[in-house]
Image 1: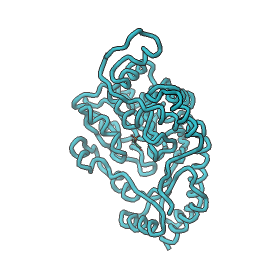
Image 2: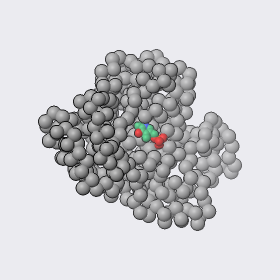
Image 3: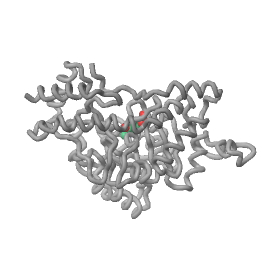
Image 4: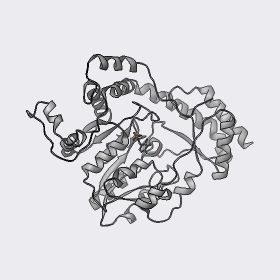
Length: 375
Ligand SMILES: *Cc1c(COP(=O)(O)O)cnc(C)c1O
């Protein structure tokens, strides 16, 4: 059986976790959280990185920082994970969905402007498969209308757009370290702040609405409740696991990239014969091999292909059911313009097994089974 995903384990996690246990400091913002924050800041160039309990929570923090209120609107793709929408909807906002580009499955930047109203507060581009959205255009529109940009970079760690790290191009960037992502702490994430003036407020929101971070730095002599907040700090045990992965991130990246390139080469002949489509990486984007997907002719063919692979011990999956067609999406969102690609392209997409440690021989076997299917 070839699993669709195996959570990354690079070696060294146990030592750091054991060190955290011995330090008798297991709650948030200890040594390992600080090391992770620092690593992310140095690697990406973000003004500030704050480790969180998930990417969902990083998105919720962005919504709190933006002071989202009842009736505000956030523009986003419908082809995304629920959290992109939910984080804002929980604060009373409406999700305004626009269509995606069929080449990258990312929000179509050319459609954003027509979805802007008086109530629009922010744009939330999602970098699908770690391949960047067209950020120059998105930032230019946001600037012209006075909107904020929240990057859902859940899948985007170590990817770049015109040389800039994903998560550092908008006002806020949200990473995920869930076990299905390239680098993991089981459950976890990070909020990247790209404006100096957000740092203090973000620290307060993350510490239950208190100024405890300032207190720990010795800047004040007692801490108090100063605003709305929640508890978005992960335990040191999780941070210790992640830190081992950050130290070996290049190894993980190279391993995944090798797998991605091998899939691409082995499936090119089927693409050339017109049976399937392969992912597109625009010239300005360097991706992180988060995902390898192919596109079949239609939904029926996809269902049959997934069944064929499953029968041969291969775990291939699809996602997302477009949010605007889900019960909560109907209730809390609206789709602006025509759904030319969101539904159609999402029904054709199949994700193939991809994880750190996937063997070349396994990839060869998977590609051979796909070839057999089309024969
Ligand atoms: C994984 C993912 C999330 C959620 O991440 P969690 O860390 O599980 O909260 C959000 N958005 C996208 C696009 C994702 O892929």
